[in-house]
Image (cartoon, rainbow, N blue to C red; front, side, top):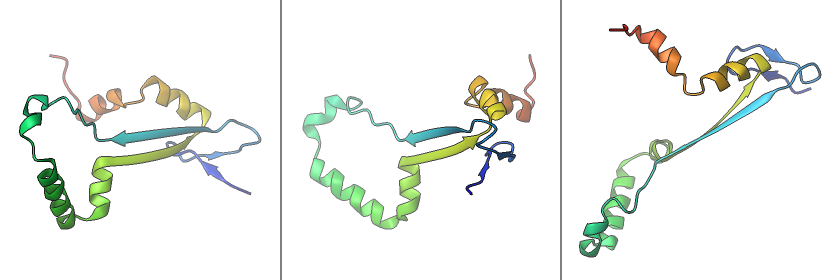
Length: 103
C-alpha cells in the first residue's frame, strides 16, 4: 500500500477517505532574445558558445542545472491545499517572519 504524506503539515493522507492534491512547480531562467537586439549584428555567436562551454567546464553540472531549471512536486491534504491557494507565493508568511512595521 502506498502511503501519502502532506508535504506541508506532514499528516498522512488516506486516499480512501480524502482527496490528495498534487502541486507541480517549474522554475526556469527567463531569456529575452530582444534585450540586446541592437547589438545583434556585431555578435560573434560561435565565440559566445565557446565562452559558455568553458564556463560550464568550471562549474558542477548539478549546480548549473538547478540555476537554470527546477521541477518540483508536492502532495497536499485538502486543508493545506486551501492555504496554498490563498497564498501560493507565501507573501504573508514572509512579512510575519521578518516582522515589518506598518510605518
